[in-house]
Length: 170
Image: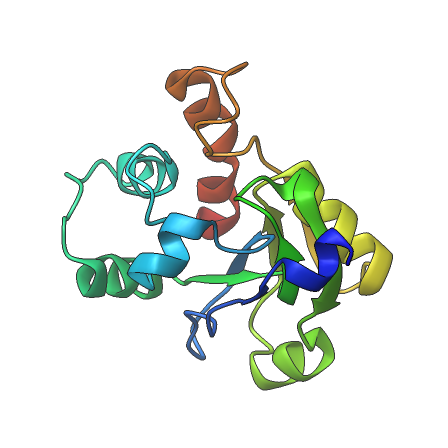
């Protein structure tokens, strides 16, 4: 029996999006803690939500429903490149047997999305492998908000993530 046979299939969450969303933030697949909590970026050590709230100079809201609405209020959609995969643990490097989300349908349903931000090199890699870039969108790679990305401080991550504001203001 191979590892793939015993590693459970992980399934991603539906997107957080509405018709006013202009920016799409893409991860790969929720980690184990996020899946357990049924929340995007649910691990307390992940900087995602702190980065988002700090970008807009707002205190971090502890409520997940409020966090989702905060994204939508700022025209930001959130989703994952992968619809499902097998993955032992939470590291993107362990992802196998990936199936990609239906981006053609997604972009057709949400045509205002013009900028796509990958929150990790792996998210970008899976997207390029399975989806490809479209000429009508601008793409940008952000440093991972994960605690596993210890090579960058929160302040360094924040500086790079400020790119999001340029597209919202532009």
